[in-house]
Amino acid sequence: MIAPGEAGAPSSGLSPAGGEGSPDLLEVSGVSFRHGDRTVLAELSFRLCAGERVGLLGPNGAGKTTLLRLLAGLREPAAGRVVFGGRPLSGRSVAERAREIALVPQEAPLDRSITAAELVLTGLAPIAGSWSDGGARGRERAREALAEVGILPLAGRQLHTLSGGELRRALIARALVRGPKLLLMDEPLAGLDLGAQGKLLSIARDAARRGAAVLFALHDVNLALRELPRAILLVSGRIVADGSPAEVLDLARVEQAFGPARADAGGSAFFPRVEG
Image (tube, rainbow, N blue to C red; front, side, top):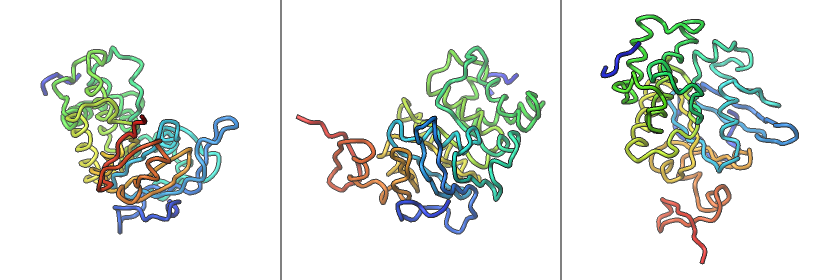
């Protein structure tokens, strides 16, 4: 136990920002996904390079969560292919994928009686084998991950006693503990205060500086404009723009994705348009 206190060209024609000169870590080519007779994702193509931070923007129901699960290898595309590290993702074993790709889901763990430390240690299973915690070195890695996200003093607390922001950090620590090459985060900032949002954005930046590609789903277009080098805008399962947030997020696209909006005088921030 851990003691407390311790892709093909973008469909929009815009050029992806960041990662220039870096080899592609992930290539998504013509990927589609269907749920029954409904098309959830349609012919998506993009690339991610090591060290990139990319915001996946779009309204509820756009297909962001489905795409993240597909990139984690939890779902198979109906068409197209995903290549990770130069090899088809579908050709990698579950253990191989888990060692190099980590998904931080929106959902909290079903068992809320375990501690934050125990949750993080489950992230070592792909490295340690079976459900081993990796021994002393594994526990040290878990301490390091908890410290990195700023909740090491909460290591011995049961999950049901944590706030939403604290639980989100514990889930991110579980992903970070094995040093993934691709870090996928599903709405990690939802419901968090400004301080917690800043901490999580710093964590994403630090992971990218260590060479990971970081892709996270967001609703907050203003945050993307100010904090991210690149944004992919997904609407109704299709990529409508991919590039720097300043290129991607003009008023017409924001309204296409999210509904009636207004921009400030410089077009550098967007707000709801209130009728009447």
